[in-house]
Each structure stands twice: as structure tokens, then as C-alpha cells.
Figure 1 (cartoon, rainbow, N blue to C red):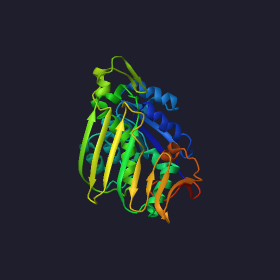
Figure 2: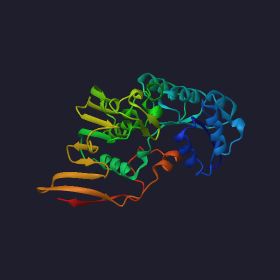
Figure 3: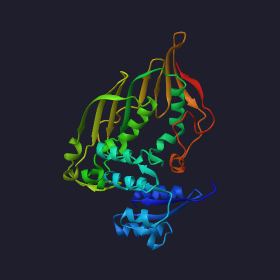
Length: 329
């Protein structure tokens, strides 16, 4: 880069420190300011990141108005994504927005309206997009190896791992497992399916296990009790698309089972599953059924690639082109 890219951080919680860690590894990036509604947290972040006290604000609008910057990372809780994103885009700043884009359709629409015509980059941060496995999966799909994907299951599962703190409050999180981890699987599935247009959704959510929990739970977000739970611990949906394809989405923070299965895709020519990446072909060679694994993928630091910011939405792997060899028949 021929010039320094100046970054402001909005929201100074745990995830903000991860953003800054990786920004500081890029020589042409400079952290220039921080805003957080908690004054002490903003000041602590400023000290940790080597910023003077006058670069810490309790109002993101002051940060945008008083500090010269090119872009912002928005690291607030889910229900506080809309206002700083809209304000930053309106102020002519590029935006890296932590997932999910929003917890409500109204907020997501407002963010998209602010982005349209702004001429600025708006990226919602899904670091698995940058993984070697997901890039290889996209290359497989783009090569037509699966044919038309008519059915998929998108899955994230924690047997018992409720994060607690602001994650379980409606006012801050907006929803539970669906917007915490479920969005990863949904985003990946829609991307690999070619972003088909949904026409109907049937869904259910549940909080049976957390609501009957007898003690104090502890997660990375803080402690929680049964009476604190305002969001779902389990979510499942059945989605039909205009093309005729179907997607089943499953996500849990807590469930009395060891696994809800893997994310997988059924195509007219072949199938594919993730984590690990495997390909399936029936009668692909005579009457043989093949299970193939992808070899030669270079390990990638997904967070580093996400913060650096090249577009992952292309048919490319993170390293040399992978070779596909038969694993079992």
C-alpha cells in the first residue's frame, strides 16, 4: 500500500481486541480511535492500543466527526449494529461489520439502504469464508461437479455451551444460537447454493434446557441463570427456494445429543459435506461409488485474511490448487 489506512473501532469489547490484534499485524494500517458506550472500557482500549485519551469516545458520532479515518470496524452487540453502520456509511467510511449484519429484518434493510449508492465497502465479517476448505468447496461447486444442488443441511451444534451475559438478552443480542453461530452455517450454505431466492420458511425455536437449568451457568460472555434466558438455545428451519431446492437449518447452544450432523449438499451429479470436506459420487466410474477427499490445502489464518479483506467470493483456494483423490469406495 502506498498510503496508510486509518481505522476506527466502534465497540471495545472482546471481539474488538481480536480485530485490533490482526489490524496491528498489517504495516499499512493504523488504529486512530475508539468508541464505546462504557467510558472506562473505551479508555482501557485506548491505552491497550497505544491511543491518546482524547481518541476514546462514548459516542460513535464523536469518533466519526472528530477523527480523520478511512474505515471502521463495528464490534458492538448485535442490536447496536444498525446506527453506527448507517452513520459510518453516511460519513463516507468503509465498514467491516461483525456478524450478524443485524438481528432484525428492519435493521438489516436500513443498513443495506445506507450502503446502496454510498460507493463504500460494506463487509459483514464471516471469517470461515476465507478458510482453505470453504474456498475449495466453492471451487468444486463452480466447476459444476455437484450439478444442481437440490437439498442441503446447514448445521452448527454445541451440546451444552450457552455463552451467557449479553448473549442471552433480547435487548442486546436480539436472538440466541441462530444469530450467534447459526448465521455461519446459513451464510455458507446460501453462498455455495448460489444465493437462491427463498419463498417459504417453517421454523421453531426452543429454550427448554436453559429454562430448567437449576444453577448458575458460566460462558465466555458471562454468567446466566434460567430466569435470564430471553433467547433461544435451539433453532431449526425448513426453507424452500424459488428454484425448488430445499434447505434445513439446525443450530444449537444446548441439545441432548452429541451431534446434529454435518453441513452437507446433495446435487444432481454429486454430493459434498464440510468439516472435513468430502465429495461423494455414485456410479461415477462404472458402478463404483466414490468418496473423495481434498488434499494439499494450505492452512490459513481465517481471521488474518478477514481483517486484511480480500474478497473470498470467487473460485479460488487459499494455496495451490487442491488435488482430489479417491478416499474409499
